[in-house]
Image 1 (tube, rainbow, N blue to C red):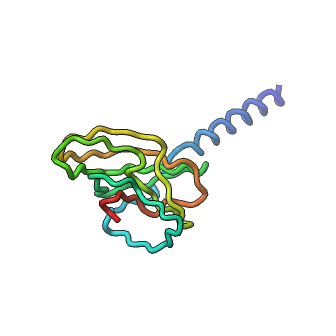
Image 2: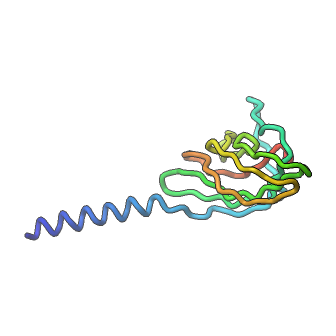
Image 3: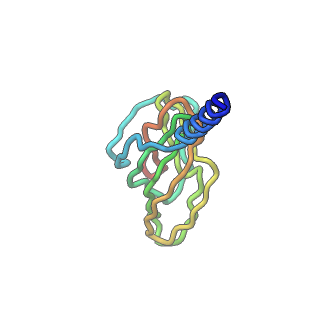
Length: 135
């Protein structure tokens, strides 16, 4: 009986520990114009040209290395536009750049929205998020 109870407790604690690894923690919140970093961009990786400006962002991650961001974006055009994942770029702590996982969101003219996007898994944290309007 004792072995059965020990096995049940072990399985339950393992499940709780796995669930805790999925929980996102806020790493940092920043205004897009407050961060100035100068990593070399030898591969010339840039966000797609567009009418979207990143106003601010909140960076999040978990113990599995998943990288997420809540990004407040403004459509600078008076006409409606569709924000695509490649309009946004993240700069990682090792100098790499990457776009979020495939994503689209419709914006009316001059509209501002906050969106939550995933930048996949990385052992390096995200330092900043920007668009072509923030470069």
